[in-house]
Length: 163
Image (tube, rainbow, N blue to C red; front, side):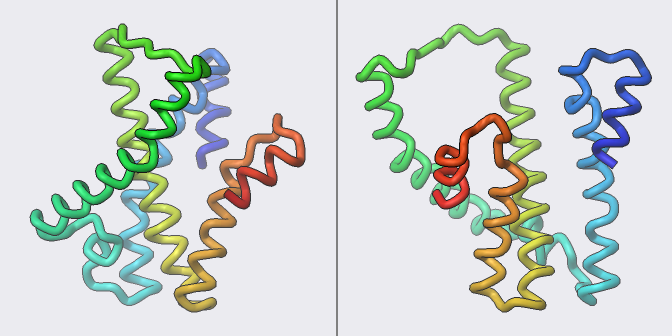
């Protein structure tokens, strides 16, 4: 569907750089509409959004959010400081409102869609066949392959794939 929508964007005369931006919201909408149906039908799940972790008690959601933000700060903070200190990165604080809105929409939208697709649906499907441990590894491998960059040489790609 995603590729078909990109071809549709081309037929509309949109520039090449806009094709993924045109197709992504429609692909996300299709995922949101069909995923609960699949979980009900195939998994026999009466509460698909709860099973996927989308519907949770507010307290649990806030605790998970704070744990995630804290973990991210602990992991990314020192790396960011080192990159800025070494001169390999530069702070560019001037963002327009449109750039900030775009960054938030992409970060939240893409993050939500990927978590739902890879850690929600795919992991659940694989767990039925492989068990919890092996399905986590298989899901991570699929995630890595989907995000592989074809412009990287073998060593760089291997580094990305194995962490």
